[in-house]
Image 1 (cartoon, rainbow, N blue to C red):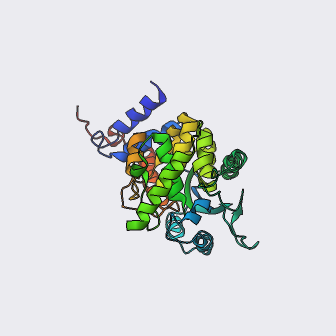
Image 2 (image 1 turned 60 degrees about the vertical axis):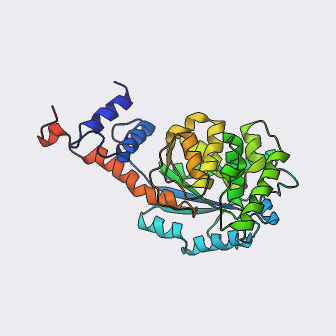
Image 3 (image 1 turned 135 degrees about the vertical axis):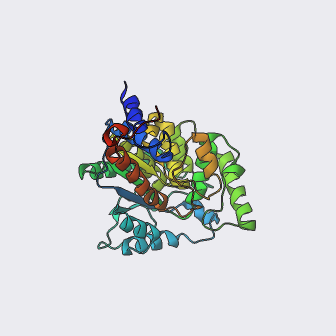
Length: 334
């Protein structure tokens, strides 16, 4: 039998009706396959939150000013955000990364300095990133994952913060999945009514302005520094056989970018939740993945990944610790 068949056999012989643990059985099979073992383990769970500003925010695609990006980073550092609460609850290590915030953080603030530029460029005038900036962001994401792997981490989640990044994600989804821009645009951080219509019109204009041909050029044209850094981090983690916890809409846009560069990394990805951000459910449908949770979240920050982690733990625990019919002396259906 192949390892996957052995894993499925082990799952099926646990003291339960076959399939009765639902998504947990699928997770156990996936995690065992990622780690190439019948007895997987989770070590030093970590979430990296990448923050960056977006030049397109100058066009008013978000009702919030871009200062909210650096202010929220300071909230992360102070331990006051939702992601801090959920990481503390579930004993997950948290690191906050400045991928491209238009702000100079004090030297004594515990933010990882990975700044490529002071935000992406305004797409109304030029592509969001130069090819070199995009490559640098991808590479820095890889480097950060290598550091965490060196500390013993084998399961890593990714979150983000950046005013304007739902717009960038909508454009990436539109281009990579060949869907109408109207299908991909959501409220983001509070866009409604006339503001939402304005946001949609601006993004449609941006889509018609550029025609990048490769996945990396598409990411550079329409993405953001935090999205590119997340994509690089996901590529590295998957190549290292780490479990990749994908958060919501923006993290999924990064995952989509990574998949368009290296399709095989999908095997390492667990899509943690179905966001309430318009377009995310459609994105997951196009990717043919079933999210672990559906809680109506649309916060970002990696919160969905942190909330899904205990269920990933449960999947590994039942696979390793639950008795089989033979072990427990319980009659099987036959």
